[in-house]
Image 1 (cartoon, rainbow, N blue to C red):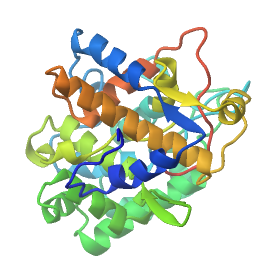
Image 2: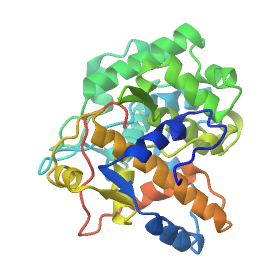
Image 3: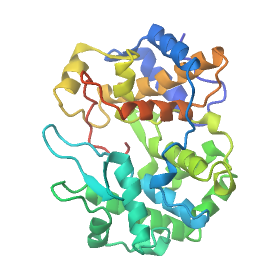
Length: 333
């Protein structure tokens, strides 16, 4: 059985999504394509995971950076636009950016402009006019999608930090004993907007995308030291979003049944929590996990988050025949 979760799956993501994949009919994986990509990647160099990462991210090496990262990942979702519509873009250091890069740069820009985005009280009291200015787009670009939800998430970060952690995310890291899985579970438990759990045929299916990526971002930005000295990263999974399944489909690994392919390629919205959307996300989790196992068999030891990063980097290029990614309005990715 290819979808066999590890015996000690503390996060619960692989165990829950394995059941989805065993019964999936709309989205499947091509195991030969997984082995083929593992062959290719095992013979190619790996870029460091922080390549191009630090330039866009505020980092003063203190607790302020840890709080900033928590805010970043509280707002890290849904950057896409509808067909033939402009995307949200921002200007940063003579460059125009979109997507996640634009979010990171806009929050870094705000700090440079004197806005204390690490201050829990400031975030708890943040008004919509101020956040609008922080996320201001270039001329001709629309506002960021789901703005009201992002404002609510900023308030949540500030409020929970004040109520439970003396305003400091490092206190949450300490409460989790600097363990990646424990910290991801803490985020999902204490910060409701991070509780990325779907309901599939009456069962809870955790994905915990933003909770997990927050842990990985801390580790990367602090280069594994200080507040980024987080253990147990091998217990994390891929961060199931909309870009990874697109690039996995490009590689022939993720395959859609005609019904789902037609919806995706016609830009028809997939409802959040629908069976098709859950199958796409479960397939993403397991494509990365099986790719990790195939690389391990070839002597290449990489965590799921490292593989996720490489796939995400691949997704930033756009071949002429690239098929669209699925579109779902959601706060989770």
